Image (cartoon, rainbow, N blue to C red; front, top):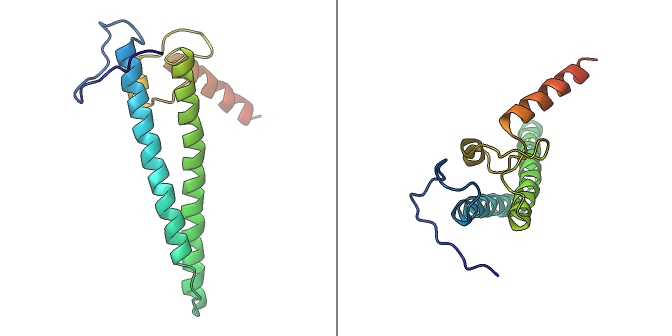
Length: 140
């Protein structure tokens, strides 16, 4: 088992250091875990709010408005649930030594892209090709 790497708060991965070094991996692991923790906390708050707000509303328009708000909140939480599974997959890739490499080309994903979207699985070029193909097939 590897010793845990301590990453300073002001650390940002740089191109002049070895790609996916222990320090970079620790940085991204920390970033992913913090993001997951935030999402899980939001989810817990939503569940508590929905449980607390189960009251009978006599006015039809008020009830409809509240149901719309609930549906929107649940849709948002569903998107966040899917995001948590992508975060878990990224954490698994870190453990398996595959994090930071494009699943299509095998090339390194840019550090700037990973910093902006730490769950990225494709390089920017591969992602753009993928999206172009999706657009073409969607238009059929």
